[in-house]
Image (cartoon, rainbow over all chains, first blue to last red; front, side, top):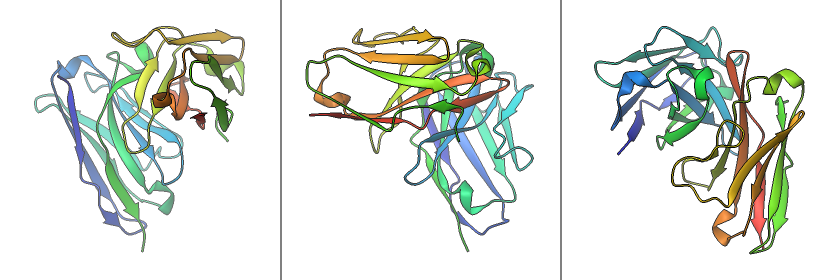
Length: 123
Length: 109
């Protein structure tokens, strides 16, 4: 059974930094791209970033490019999202999701999701 | 302004068939035909219904079907059930990024 669990969400001040983690199990981790998708309060889903199965290719939404960095540790089945220069608009629940392929452009669909970790950016 | 536009809300009756739309702002948004649909109940994680425009994940009911015509993609739900009441999102891969539509709230009365 596929299992995904995020952690690291907290209250942080504007301009601050935060690192989210996503632990996965139940599948061959390095064979799949992983994404972060967020949902701000009262808003819809927004794709944030993705990383290929091997970790060599990364993708970012324009809204976070230059501020967020995605990475992965395939030996520990974990994906990370380093978030710097945080803004109030980054307040959301952040979900980690498994893609259907090894790179984002292979399938670009998410069958398995974690429950999410809440991030609040406020002074 | 999302590159994918969905109606804010639709209403259907139990047993009815209903089609939800997802319109791309420009043709290139659908270039790769990597269009997916999700159902999202509040407080739960989104559920993948359709990928690659028309394909269903293994084990998913055939009540859900996807299609595309020009700049628009569609999700058809047949035999509406109370549990289908949820927010539905389309998504598409384009130019090294992925975009979601704003979501359509389906009410089953």
